[in-house]
Structures are given as C-alpha cells and as structure tokens.
Image (cartoon, rainbow, N blue to C red; front, side):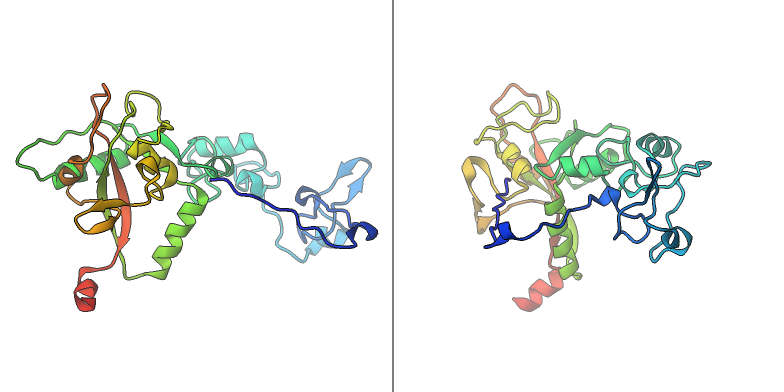
Length: 277
C-alpha cells in the first residue's frame, strides 16, 4: 500500500519568519520543550539546572541492563545503547522482538526497526517444529481434521507479521465488540508458486490466491477480486475443519505442499446470532 502526501501552501508564508525546528533528540530529556544545554562542546541531557535537579517531567531512568548506570533511552527500549539492548535480550531480561529475535520489544511484539519494516507490507518467517506456536497449530489442525476421503498431514508453518495499521484495525474491532469470540479457522485457495520450497517470501503473481491474500491481508484475492463467491454469496470463506478448506487448496506447481492460511477471526456468539435471526 502506498500513501500520497500533498504539501499544503499557506498564502503569505514566504513573508513570515520561520521558527527553527529542534530535533526531538536535541530536546531536554526531562521537560521535552527546550534544547539541551551545551557546555564546552558537551551536550547535557537537560536544558537547565532546574530540570537537572527536579525537572517538571519524569526523571530519566538508568539503563535496564543490570549493572549499567548510564541513562536509558526510549529508542533502545530504555537501554542506553543498541549493544546493551541486544545483551538484555540475550540474558533474558526482556522479551525479544517476534521478527528479528535480537532486539527487545518496543512496539507491541516488535522492535522499532522491525515495526517500521512491516509498515509497508506483511513479513513472513518460518517457525521451527520445536516452537510452541508450531506445536499448537499442528495439534489443532490434526484434531479438527474431519474427512472420510483424505488423511491429514502437516509440514511447515510460516508466521505472518502484519503491518502496524492492520494490527491496529483488528485490535480496534475487537475492542468495539467485546462480546465477540476469537475463532481460529482455515482458508484454502489456489497457490501457483512454490511456497514452502523456498524462503518465506510471497510471490507477485496476480493469479496466486494465497500470496495475494498474504500481501493484502484479505482485502484482495486472486486477479484482484474483493471477495470469494460461494453458496452463501460474496464474502471470505474459512472453515474450522481444515479438511473443508483443503478442497480449495489447489496447486499447479511441482511443490509437494498444499497451502492453507490459518486465520483468527472475531465472530458474533451463536446465541446472539439466533436472537437476531
């Protein structure tokens, strides 16, 4: 997704004196309003003696790494430096970013760098077979599979890291509908690439139903369609029973895998549906 930013021109702005903009890194770390005091070429973290003694804002905390007395910085998840932030993750003092597994979490379950990276489009990463998420999904998949014609099998799992705006919309929807239930279901579609035999990167083919969904977060399907079309009309079709989704998980490549998407959806409770009907 791309965004277009348009400049707004104010009439007569050329005749006005421009106020210099101070970068946030150069503002006082206590009040956040005035520039930091510079003395003999050294920049202090405060703007004045009053802020240094009993500033109007919260006092800066020490680096979170045990034994370090330097000032922690928000850019490094309240560690004093990137090196100490990584060391804090290695020592198990803080949880690691879900994507890079190196930096500490800062924005939700991601670090600042990874959060910026997934702002443009979703990212994928393969889960190890010994990870908790892999085992939980495999258990659900195998237990929910119900078919008299085909047996179930489970190979690989790619986790999808959603962009910040998509995650925010999902959380807002859940907050606005607190009585709705979170349901794990499976979606099947045509996959024309060799996903599963290469790295965790979706293809760019417009006819690949799986990768179109991954890139658009279910807002666009193969050939640019906005919805699926099934027995209940237009919509997004997913199933608690993965065997039902498997009927639509077609593949026209040499890949040994059939691909499905496991998705979490917020749905209205059954008793509310019956009442409204």
